[in-house]
Amino acid sequence: DAEIPEDHPRHDSLVTRHRIEDGVEMGITSQQGLIAQGRGEAFDYLLGERTIPSADDAERAAAAALLAAEHPVLSVNGNVAALVPGELVTLAEATGADLEVNLFNRTAERMQAIADHLREHGAEEVKGLAADAQIPGLSHERAKVDRDGIYEADTVLVPLEDGDRAEALGEMDKTEIVIDLNPLSRSAQVATIPVVDNAVRAVPGITEHARELADADEATLREIVDEFDADAALAAAEDAIRDGDLD
Ligand code: PTJ
Image (cartoon, rainbow, N blue to C red):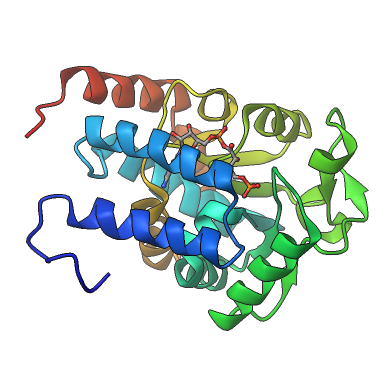
């Protein structure tokens, strides 16, 4: 990161790119993760590389949903493990959520490398390695989850999820929070709470709201979740992309 000058106009985007490259080198991020990152960057550029107001609302609703949940789980893939490992551990602590490694392209090596990486960033317990349950409606490898983790969770945060899996999780009657820069992606479309923002900003953003809402009672939290309008948030993101002033 040191060689990128702070005042470079694409500073944050270049730092993010290096983290994903390092993730691939460390055996955390998949090669497909590089392609996903490129796709995300294009949308982030169109959004002005900022958290738009509707995404900030979504981050507040996400925080409320995690705090109100009986059993919240943060799903971790190879991209977010490289981008925001410490921030995921902090969010889990702030909301009482479990961390579960859950990969689209699952390999034993990458599962282990990500679990180790999260522990190096302060995680105490990392789920996902037991894989003793399956999400219904998906092929075997893609369906694997922990019974006492994602399978039994009432609220799941899935960053950068593949559309099929986002849909299958939604059908399990969970509150599903999806972080995805593409408001047209199937994952964002099927989410209870779509957060159209870069995971690099969204994860700390949700934590900040969780801290503000830490003393709120359950009725207040549920009201924040109920008042959130997913369709309006997706439409606002699409408008921001179409009408945004780019520099
Ligand atoms: O580590 P694995 O095996 O679980 O694989 C993870 C990836 C991301 C490779 C896998 O889930 C995948 O292939 O995802 P897709 O189908 O490429 O979808 C990625 C979505 O995330 C796209 O809509 C991108 O626009 C979006 N995206 C990419 N980077 C970010 C992002 N959204 C938010 N923050 C980002 N940094």
